[in-house]
Each structure stands twice: as structure tokens, then as C-alpha cells.
Image (cartoon, rainbow, N blue to C red):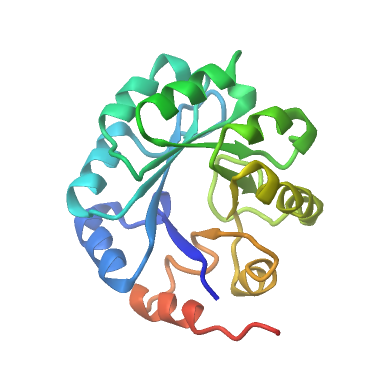
Length: 222
């Protein structure tokens, strides 16, 4: 079964960032997930534009940039200039007055457009945007910090989005508290990719390649 694995780089060892990127790249990760936080939209600061540029320098694999910032239209050009075709930018619709305008800037630049949906955001409020994005990142935890508790009521949200994805032409991605059990359950249902953080990938005292291989070789029910 094919599905994508993305490394949540806010969980990496920043004392050895280049080494982390190279180990994940060699270990078979599909893309690098970069959480940008401004301390306003969420109550935390995470990665920066310079972190993004550093990671871009050490890998040719795609970057998935998750903007947890207020009014991303004001800074979107900075991120676009640091990316290339094949990379993705996710915005949170609630963070923007006119999110479709920001998404169109991303599209016009040749970057893959995506939206991130918080646990408390209903599918109905973003329904029209599903027609113009290529990726929908569903948060299964409240945004802003790693290691948070899974919120089981988001399961219904996945079901609803998966029922729309063929008609509207987008893929669904999982972000937050991603365990092997959840990959085993949701990959067969159509979730395209999974952001791996402290639950499964980082801080486990074993090579990233070993963990990634274990996930790839998991058995799925027929």
C-alpha cells in the first residue's frame, strides 16, 4: 500500500539539523514538514524562514510548509521565494480575511496549495476552498505544540473529506499524534500521507531508517 511519510521537523535535533535532514533523507522520508508559528495564531513560536532555507539546502525532497500565522497574505511572498515547484504551502483559512486570495498567490507561483483544518473547524466552513486546493491537512490535535493528545472526534471529519476527495481533486493528510495504529487504520481508507513527530519517529533512540522501514512494512487488513 502506497502512502507518504513526512517528517515533522519542529521535533528534530536543532543542534545537528543538517545531520538530521540527511539521515531522514537517506532513511526514506518522502518530504519534510515545516511548522511556521508566529506566537499569535497559536500560542507558540516554532520554526523560522531561516530553518526552512537551511533544510532546503540539505535535501532535494519536497518541503511541506505549514503556516500557523495570522494573515499569511502579508508574508507569503517570503516563503514562495524560498520554495520550488513540488513544494507545498498550507494555510489556515481562519487566519485570513480572504483565504482564496492567498491560495491563488500560491497557485500562481507554481507551489502546491493546501489548507490545514483545526479540530474545531468544520468541513462545511471550508467546503468551497476544497475545489481549489490540492492538499487538505487535518489536525487531529490542537495546533501549536508537539506531543498533544489525539482528539477522536476528528475521525468523522476524515470520513467526510475522504468522501469528497475524488470529486474535488484533493488529497487528505494526517497531522498530529500519528501512531502506527492510525496509519494502519487510515491509509487503507484513503489518507494519502502522515506527518510523523514524537509519537512515532523522533526521540526513539533508533535510526530513522529503521522506523521508516518498519512503517513501510506494516501489515494491512485486506
